[in-house]
Image (cartoon, rainbow, N blue to C red; front, side, top):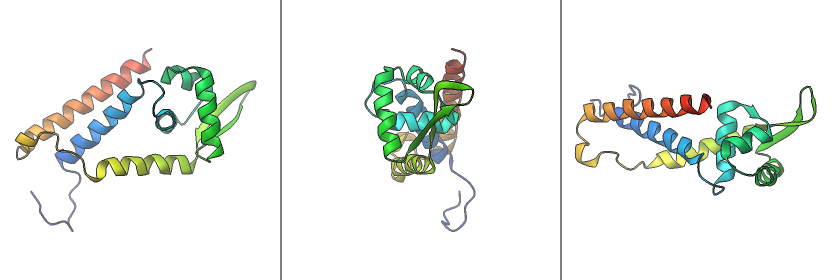
Length: 150
């Protein structure tokens, strides 16, 4: 193990496990009711690029009226844009702006600033942390694939 902070050899297994857990947490957060709706909208837009309000409401499992109010607030704050859907005169497409993606990145950085130890009693065991990182990543992929098949 390299203790020299000036030499970087890539993320440690603990950092990978923490990142995988945070990504999984965000995926699970999408299933909760409206608390944190703005954050969840930005996470989905980051992942999919752009979505119709109807699809966003469906993925978030919230009423379209709640989604419309929140996307209007996000647009007013400059975090998303809403534009006419190509080929559909009545449809809209919502996209995260650069400011919205930056805010999401800052929120993630705050969470990663001081991550809690995932396995405090096994902290010295790199193999355990590496195994956990792999399991969490596989679980996240499975959840994502399952959502994509709906």
